[in-house]
Length: 243
Image (cartoon, rainbow, N blue to C red; front, top):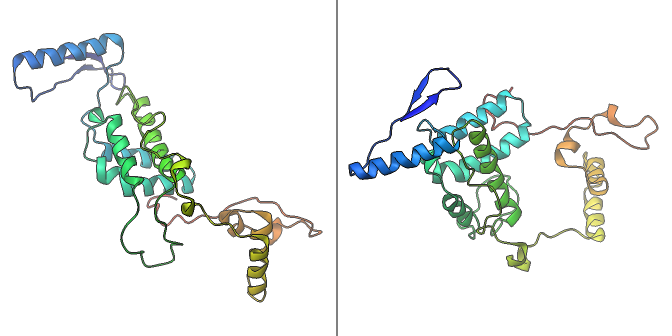
C-alpha cells in the first residue's frame, strides 16, 4: 500500500502486510487500511513491540531530565507487569482487553514468601490507587506512542473495570494510622537516638521522606521558628544511565 510521504524523511512511504490465507482476506485487509488512510487515522507502528517502545520511552524521559522518582516508578511498573505480560505484542495488536487483563492480575491477592531485606510491611493485596498507578504508566507510554504516530488510539485511556473500587476492599486492608498517643510513645522511645529531632519533625510537620532527607542546616530559619524545603533527595540506584 502506498501510504504517502514519510514526514520524517520526505520520501515515498510504502507498507506491506502478510500472513493472509486467501486473496479475498488480503483484499479486505487492504480496503480497511485504505479507509483508515483516507480518514486520516492510519498509522504505522513499524513492527514495534510494546517492550521495545517502553525502553525507548524511558530513554527519552531520562534524556529530557524528567523527575528521577517518576522514572523510577515507571520502571518498576514496566519491569513488574507491562513487559513480562505484554512486552512481546506489537503496538498495532494491543487492545483494551489486554490492559484490563494485566490490571485484573494486579488486583489478585499477593502470594509467596516475604522478600528478604528492608522493604517495609508485607501487604496482602494492592490498593486500587496502586493498581491505577500501573494504568497511568501504560497510558503515558501509549500517549507518547500516539503522538509519534505509531498508534491511532490509546487503549489505556479511561476508567478500567478491572480496577476495584474502594468499597470493594475489605476493612482489614485499610492502612493503620498511629493515634496521637501512639506517636508520643514512639517519640519517647527514640528520644536518645541521634535522629530523634528528624523523627519528631516527620511526625508533626508531615514532610515526605525525600524532603526530610534533603534538609540542610541552612534551610532552617535563623531564629529557629521554621524551615523551608528547598530540595529533595531520592534513591536513583535503579536508574541506569540517569545522570
